[in-house]
Length: 154
Image (tube, rainbow, N blue to C red; front, side):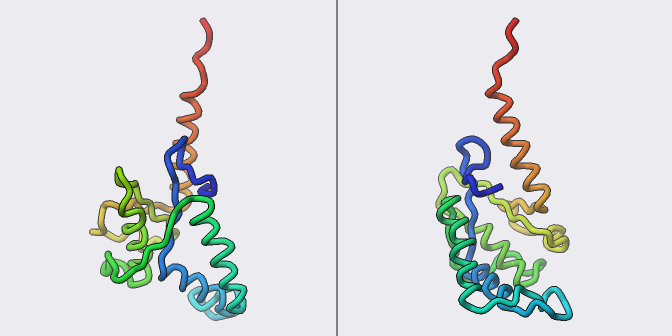
């Protein structure tokens, strides 16, 4: 959905990460495959493979495909009501493309129901479930494509 780097038409769609997300990706990739809870399970990879995932997948998506970037978190926004981990993710979305002019629309896509239901968060970030984000992008692209279709000849 994001690899084109465009939301709809020429409107950019950038993917952003942060030092926290990067470290979490490596940590989860290195966690054992077998563990009692999903929080403790990962891919069971070694450090080298985990760092390759970071560079070849995440950084390729962020920099090469979407023109996004990295946020260096030095504090968090939204804790509470979010736990520290979720607040780091929320802060990444909030601080992404801070220097964009005009200001960008910021989306944070998550399956986490508690995250999604949190109240009193900064309204500059729209929190969506993955299916909602995909539907939003598809509807926007479809509406733009429909405008390009010439009206029927009379």
